[in-house]
Structures are given as C-alpha cells and as structure tokens.
Image 1 (cartoon, helix red, strand yellow):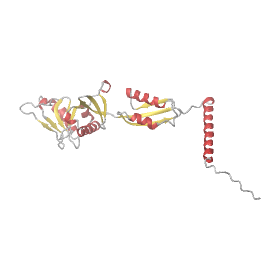
Image 2: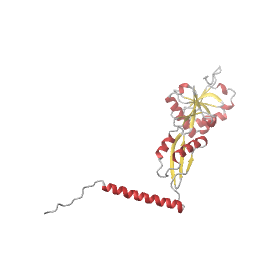
Image 3: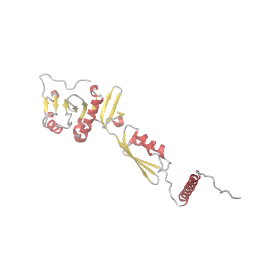
Image 4: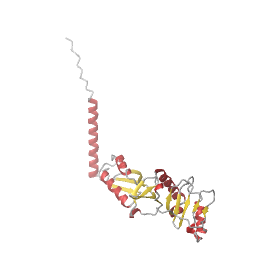
Length: 262
C-alpha cells in the first residue's frame, strides 16, 4: 500500500512572527545593556534633561523655555516629536523661524529668530507693533516701548497702504538708519511715502521707487541750512523725489499748517 506524502500546512504568518520575535529579543537585549551601562558603568540615558533657548530674551525666552520643557523633558532625545514642538513655537506671531538641535546625551537646543517691529499702528482699539514682514504683533506696552515710526492716518492703514509703508520703513532702517531713527510718523499718499521727523514739522515726500533717494542730501541740507532758518516752522514741504535735488516748499505769505490734526 502506497503511503501518501506528508505535507506541512502552509503558515504564511510564520516569517512575520519569527521576525517579530527576533526584534523583541534584540530590543530586550539592547534595553538590558543600556540599563546595565547606566547603572554600573556610568553611562547616561539619551533622554532630555536640559533645554537651552537662545535668540530671544526676557518674557519671550521664559515663555519658550516653559513651553518646551512641558513638551520634551524626560522624552527620548532622538525620538522627540520635533515637528509638534516646531508648530507650537512658530504659531507665536513674534517667531519668524526656529532651529532645533539635539545635543547628546541630554540637551535640546533651540535657536529662535524673532520678528522685529518697524512701525507702530495706532487704531481705535489700541496701538500695535507691525513687523518688518507685515505681521501684526503685540500691543505696545512698557516692555516694548521703543520709539519707531507711527502710522496714525486712517487712509494709510489699508492693506496696500500699510504694506507700502512697511516696505519703506524696512528699507530705511536697513540703508538709512540715522534718518529712520528720526522719523516720528509715516503716511501713504498717491505721490509715495510721506515722512515726518522730530524737530521739522513739514512733510517730507519720499520716492516710491527708491525710498532712500536724496535722503543723505536732505540730512546734510537740514543740518547745514534748514535747521538754522528762523522760518523753519513755516516751510511747507520737502520733496526728495527729484534727481539729485532737494526741493523745499518756501513759506507763503500766511503760515501754512504744518501737519493736519488727527
């Protein structure tokens, strides 16, 4: 009598089970070696015990420090959810960018890039800081009370007008910092940006194409001649939009209003 061949039933799950068991054994062995090393050989566990925050100071640094420590302290250094941490921090309006660095064995370092205000925006519900990329930041308070140009004119607070003034302020701060520091108010107009500086009540018309045009010429003229004039308060305007020339609006017979009331 012929014997039927004996065949084993197919078990497709067996290779996966064997791989799982192997990984579990290796993981357990690794964990055991880590425990032995940390307990008897002085090795440190790769968990986050310190958080270093740079790039900001004061209340902002304390705010980021507290948030980060709540999210990551005691977590594995190389398995920490960096994307969640990034999204939580970059959701703050004053944060422009963030770099996260993992420093073994136990430190997480954050480098914050702040947005910097270039304008004060005066509205009926308060005074706000506007950043150099057009983001509305915090309300003005004692902690951030730095003198920068103010936008008060309601007609200049449209989206387009404010964007033009932010661009003008950023360019002046980068290329003509001395003039920018003297500006008390900026306005938008069909002719281009209009600046008012301390000690000179007349409007200064700036070029829309190149907001720094003739600014050095004006500063030299103001120091050498204009500031010495007894009729300084009656000058009607200064126009810097001409090529290599500063146009000064001489006083009329009757004193001209220097700056319309708000």
